Length: 385
Ligand SMILES: Cc1ncc(COP(=O)(O)O)c(C=O)c1O
Image (cartoon, rainbow, N blue to C red; front, side):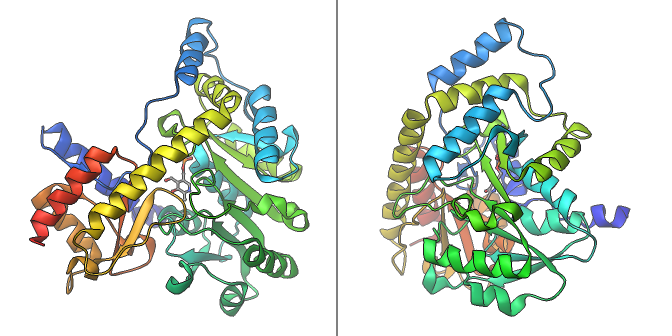
């Protein structure tokens, strides 16, 4: 049993980010293109409500499933934004979206269950699945179709042991957005096979080109759907640690029990702050999305001044995922290259291998434009391009 944990890989994004932070702490200038967060100050209303919550002593343990007004407002927000139909009883407030995924795998996977994971994937999916004895089955996406997988490709790798699909739309690291027709085919396959779907939609509000479609808007799958949302990305509240799960009532009851025996729920103060974020949702999401779009455009434009092939802007998310060869980098693994430029030139990128895709790297555009420009100049200088 202990071996499972000893062999568990450290999250590569967290590892690179930690080394970058270590260098920063020593006073070195680090160009951070690795962080998975919009670097923005909290909206004033959110910050104010948090300090009022502290002053008023709203600092005791929260109800395990989350404070009722936040559960209710979260369901309303999802329903009106993405044409879903969830009630308060279908809603659980978690310590970030990550814990929601963790608890869902703990609750619904048995040892040897196979879990389909489209790649390039978010680094934590395979590790979480393995932690609970499941077997991650990687389904490589089609680069010419923005790395998306089709129902047919999923079906090819399915076996009688397949129990779950973890679908990430909008995608990290790819920035892809699935069309309704593509999702409809995946939904009908999952329904026919009785798979549970964990739909990780934490980047939904950072959609720039094209429409984001929630799997929650397909009533035929809601009985087997765990929909993961978060305040981290589109509300720019990463450190507050507030996520949401939308699921059938039976699943919410199980997940609440797991939460009750593990985290006890997320911070009361953060929950009041998140409620205020929902009260100002349109304004905050519009601002965060517009700011991230301009950071995306700036990073793409800077890299395209010297890359060997043009990088196109991702439709959603916070990342550019590009082949290293366009920077003239070859004959070295992505992990070796990323470690080397962090050590030698203080530039933090995440290797494609962490996402199940060798030969690529991920650059985040969560940092302010000036920081992105400085990082790209440092990269250009290092590569002598
Ligand atoms: C695809 C994806 N899902 C989930 C998460 C978890 O986010 P949080 O726990 O901050 O809500 C992240 C964070 O980087 C992510 O990239």
